[in-house]
Image (cartoon, rainbow, N blue to C red):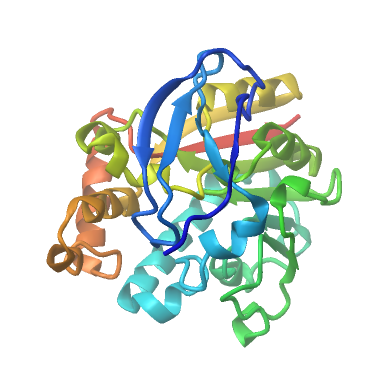
Length: 315
């Protein structure tokens, strides 16, 4: 492992505040071991956003997102858990149709336009191919992804070395999906604005992002919580701030929590010895099912999970 170059971030990436910031965690890249740097997360006193103080330089993207990054090679590395992931994606698709696109029920589904920003290997989009004609995916890099394989045919994939420089059509998409992406960019508010501008009237934006005030984050020592995902998560944004800004841009927004067994499993792995890591693995379907059930139960009794779902509708 090597020491990678970093940039000292003086102001909050969400609100630009330079008020005194409290250190909340010092952690490492436990998941992919891409570098030996210790990474420091601080809390903005103004907007309550948590952000990475020593952010990796942009030229290190190919290092901190290695070829074995999970969203790039999920099928190859996870076997049965890949099928579970597809089942979960189908659940998201059902959630999308019946709770997010009901207002489009009279529209020909073959004309609905969907974009996924931060699409990884395009697995979610590939499941929609049978039903939707206009599908687009945007990803940071091509490393580790074969966009030319048959299951991805017919999907318009594009590559951006830095999604912060997002360029997509305005007033065009009926649905934009942004799963676990906004925490990876250096100017999240600008990216959010561009996504909203790209929605058609009554279009929907679905954002999923980590939530620090969850049960698993409270139980697991802060440096080992998987939600930090250092050094790839650059800002964990206060969901109220996302909703407030969306409303200022003329949208309606709604907040909910969804299961995220990955957070439990990866957090426990960060605490475990190498022998136990083989058991507590995202490739172990029984462990995935167990923690999915735990999260569903927590949601049912009123607790919060590490996975926030924010639905934004453009008026």
